[in-house]
Length: 235
Ligand SMILES: C[S@@+](CC[C@H](N)C(=O)[O-])C[C@H]1O[C@@H](n2cnc3c(N)ncnc32)[C@H](O)[C@@H]1O
Image (cartoon, rainbow, N blue to C red; front, side, top):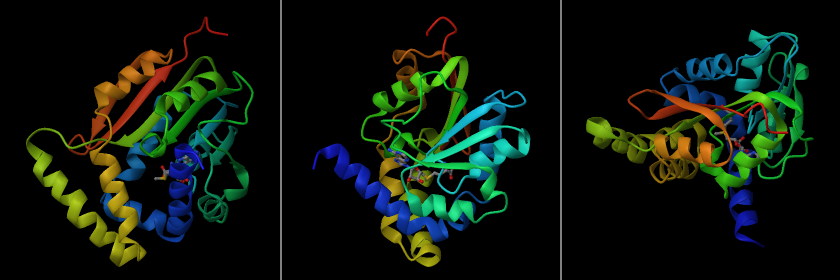
């Protein structure tokens, strides 16, 4: 088994196990702020009526459902490699209106330039190869289309010691109480601490061909939404 397979497998199994408690834990961990960030992601995707959208690492579909709420006639594909997360998402209201597709973000089963926008929440921390994932997003989005990325960021500035304590101590405890799974939330904490800062992530978008790259920070700089565009003359 290659390293890529082993990290991917571990992450996939972890999310399969987390699926029943995932939505509740998200609301608790973020003090109910998480849906606002997803609304911001969808706003930044700049969608028109009838847009074809890929929400990658869709999990239980939070961002994909928000796309449907904002653009009811959008054609929305919710892609993820955890069947457990997608099965949970399908049981949610309007779950049948999304097209759920099992896929690996590093090897997308979609044609070149086939989406008006690609969104993803909390994906890049989990993949073995961020550049490869960004190149795949670049390939499948149409020239002129947007890619919008939501993720947690390593602690920064004066609040860093408090944020670190929250991630290291409080999250595993909440994970134990509400999801019976402290290890998954220890992983979340570790993957956030070891992740790129927002400026570096923006640079990764640029070096993979994207233009108009920018980001906005939320919640004491612990969460970032990056947006980027595939330039028009790139087919
Ligand atoms: C923290 S959840 C985020 C779900 C959703 N985007 C949200 O906003 O709540 C991360 C998701 O990424 C998926 N994922 C991680 N690595 C992936 C990969 N290489 N390909 C596809 N999905 C992946 C996991 O299965 C999981 O459902």
